[in-house]
Length: 421
Ligand code: ATP
Ligand code: MG
Image (cartoon, rainbow, N blue to C red; front, side):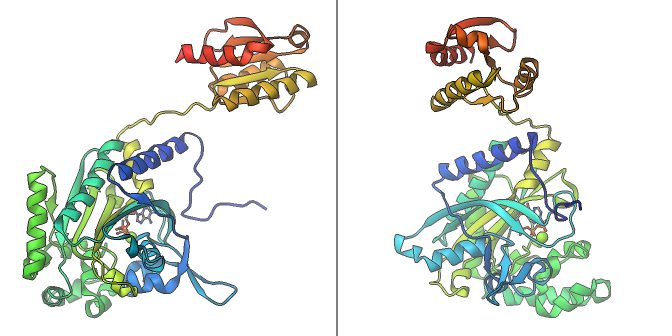
């Protein structure tokens, strides 16, 4: 029997892990620079949470959720996104008592049953932030700045920020009506899904991958905003212009989730082909109430880590290679092996990474392995050395070797490493 990983999932190992460290470390650092704290929510949630928030008539809920019944008969879903769980946690833990605004970030796996292809997986990972408790356009600016700062810091180039406002429950009905009229006049060209969604959720038609060409000629949402939404949008744009924050207005940009209000945005990369959206987000002022909480304005974004890694690789960005160990302790015989383990522990307590032989191999094989691991030096310990209470310390870059008394070998190694960096 041969076992294979589930379609649309990835094993990450070797060099690839460095990209993950690089992105996760930078995500945490940038989040912290703006005062965002980590929130970790469960991977499983009640199905209803996503139906209620993401929306009944969205691709995520209709086609993409990993939903199952657990042994207690509850309907459980592997989270397809991170905003609804964050809002659920905020309400459930009465975090509002800590005052507003509050800033959160998360990093973790999401699950969607999609057709796997480059940059589109069934288990993928997102870095996301949520700024909770401000309706002011300056909050939108901040979240966009976090996104830009993050992308710039990891070295993504040639991206474009697409911005739009899709209004609020007050002005959206007008827009929806205009959109419906537009698409009705092109009814024959619509895909089957869109023919149905025309009456249930007409905004979704703009997001349809099949009917993308039709969207280009569709009415633009920012032309139908009520006064408040317009003022919000205008101030947001003006602030961005004043900050020399580059963006393009995209009046038919809607997002694939129903909870958005007013500001929506997507960051697209010029070279990533069909899966070119590397970051996306927006405002969700109605979501807290929708999920049974106190009305609280908020916004956020999420960025797909796999797509970021693809982008960095396409651009030829190399990430720092972590050495696997600094010191290799090569030993021959039982007594030397025991002594080697003792020295290794002493070094590790001082923060030096050490690998020892665990296969009782010949010296040559051990030194070969030390080289493969990229160790800087090897400590060699055999019967002879033990008898004389010494070890040989070998610099692996030039094979020079010195004899060091066992009493001071730990200090010697630390000093030598320090002088070589
Ligand atoms: P798309 O239009 O590409 O399907 P989306 O609108 O469904 O994206 P969001 O729900 O906004 O995506 O998620 C935010 C980001 O997460 C996306 O911009 C993308 O970078 C990433 N992402 C979404 N779905 C996947 C997936 N199946 N595999 C890999 N990354 C994904
Ligand atoms: Mg999608």
